[in-house]
Length: 214
Ligand code: ZN
Image (tube, rainbow, N blue to C red; front, side, top):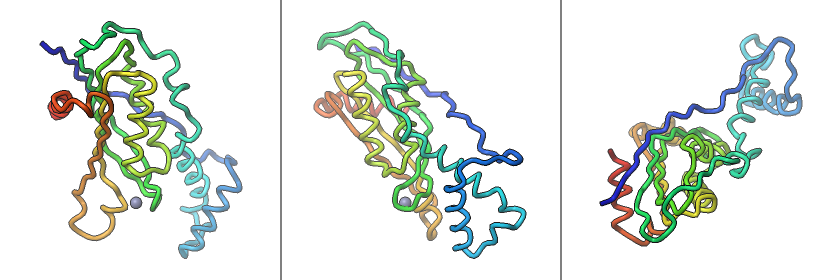
């Protein structure tokens, strides 16, 4: 009889101050690039509403691409636990779903965002739930394509956990599609990456897909 654990993630994302404090200097070079862009768009960067925009944009972009400065190793730190089953009889699937993520497409630098579900069959190691969401963020907070993001999350968790099998499914809405033309507002892109027994054993993959939908 298989045992199953299904969790819905409630991890909140990194908070940081994206506002402009009075007199604050952040990154003059970066801010000047944004100012140039505003001019190119036909705007007046000196008008009241836009005065601090270059600073805010620089901060926001640094935040949204903060994954470049992070590694999976530092995020996981001590969050791996030795746990139970270590032979081929391991059959307790762990599924974490509804992991919110926000990324930016590398083609248009526009946001895409959605939810990830991750399942694995542990093989001696499990990971704290909130850490899974943080691993997703390490890769999501970069310029990405959804397929690569999905594969990178799968490969990173495979390496860290060495499970018997693992699956990552990501469903996202892409603003670069939604904001252009009609009839694309409700389009979702679904990508998946299967590793180990999630790839080789159809029954295991089917079980994951079933748990994911619940
Ligand atoms: Zn795009």
